Length: 374
Image (cartoon, rainbow, N blue to C red; front, side, top):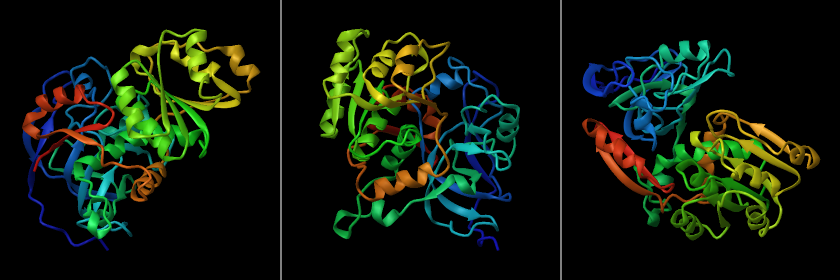
């Protein structure tokens, strides 16, 4: 049977975008109710992505329905679960994984509060029960997208065997999930060498630290010298190479650490002409693997013959698979992937969304910016 309902007000506060490019508006709207296969979360900390402002002002023309409660992943506390919940329970702290799949066709998915994925089926899914995301006091989400967090272990005091993380620091899990999905897709093993590029953005830097936590040796490529230095400070398994326009010199700088077994690419939209992709592939050993998880605009040139003669496996993937979040949480719970150096760039009320978006733009890979209606 369904869990006993906890006290939920009939209305709650949420940010709404009524039409694309229009400013968000703080509004009082009906509180979401349970539907089959759902749970209601109190949003404790909603993550803000560094480019989220550009999504809603139209700079990045992502497709999504309006009116919309925007958002992304979050850390929440379960208020109610439906009759089909067997493990999740009220008051439990969870990670809401915002990559939502269709139950009757797992090949279709969308990003909660951000993008409908561009397929008619995914568009229908986002426009329905899961339309509203986490920039609100409460949110309704699919059961399978809620991943239980051991609050005593993750947030408890060190003297009691806890790790002492804050709820805000735990939102960094969503950033790390993306790169972890790519690393798993090419079977990264302990002791292997992986190139991560660009590694000075949020997702790339997080991926470098995740790879190091997986006991791999990491070669992080990027332009920002200070960020590269910070990566080396955070893990003894990370070495860095500053991107320099490609060519033999850049390849040799990568090979200084030995031929790489794998390469994870997380190129942003403006990186279609970047030479780092070719350099990293040239630095791979025979039989190396490549995971493509970026989003360059337009076509990208590959060193075709290099890929063929080296028997390189090329694997493209959007986001990650369903079990990735659970395994990443295990990595953090074990202490192998540490969050104590994650810094909170800012925690903002819902009505402070413009300031929150501004702060998020300047985040480093080891920082989080969050919003909360509490």
